[in-house]
Amino acid sequence: MVFTTYTGSFPLPHNEGNVRRVLRDVSEIGIDWPNYPQLINFIDMFLAPIARSGGLEVREGRFVLSGELKMPSIDEAIQPILESLEAWRDEGRGMGLRACVTGPFTLSSFIFKRPGTTNIMESALGDREVVHFLANYINSVLRRLEELGINYVNVDEPIIGTMVGARRNLFNYSDDEIRGIVDEAYRGINVELRGIHVCGRLNPKVFNILGRIERVNILDNEYMDSPENINYLSRDVVGDKRLAIGVVSSRNPTIESADSIAQLAGKIMDKVGREKVFAVKPDCGFGSLRTESGNIEEAYKVSLEKLKALRTAANIINARS
Image (tube, rainbow, N blue to C red; front, side, top):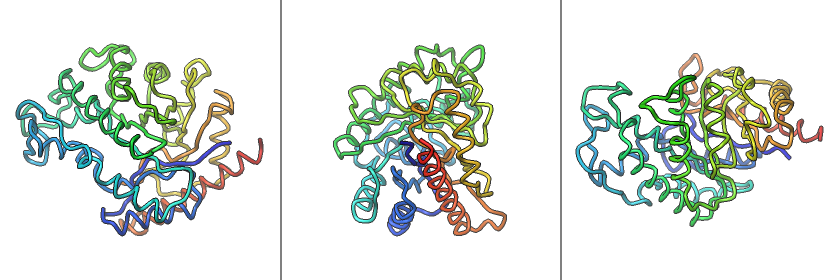
């Protein structure tokens, strides 16, 4: 059985009405694992609570190190997820609520050592102490989500696609060090489904790192807007993991046909084996999806049509088994 899910964000402002609206709409489509509607910026959601606790300041719209980082209230950090969980219990259907959290590498890349810069080389990504603090922070978030009964969690680390080079990694991180920090975030977490999401065009080394992260069992990457990624897949790379495959564009407003989605998924299954594909999904979140008019309601409607096509494609795939 191939399931359906999505990364999280939609092109709508955050309020309780929109949270319930999204969960109701995706449940009516029949998405198996709705993600909480990520209507708040995925960096601000996790760094703003630290800024209120201490060690970070917001200067010129950026997070800047100001001292020793202090652990914030975890329930404050996951308030949008708590809100969504309550709404899903009222409005939603499916096999559970999926929760994505931003990973320590990506969060650290948005923390800067001085105001007035956006240069990644001047970010805290190279500060091991900060990165390990954030791994411990995200571990606390995941522990709380497990306590709440969330049965599918995903650590989103888009920056890994940038920091891992074909020959060397930014800030001289070793491949083992990268794997170890993701495992640190997942330390002691026994949620059934534990994913890592790295979007964009990747290289073979990224896949080799992801496939060997010990505590992750779902690899979540994009293949619609980055079809080159298919070339780097193999049974050996995937190992004992399964895949949540991005087969619908989260940027292009053109609505894919169910047949074309199923065909793309089939190419991936040919590479790794059908049993290794756990779910089909969009490449990334729909938060930045825009149509020519710029109207967010129109963009939201497009995102739902894409999820409908995804649901139909999953039905086609499952009917062939």
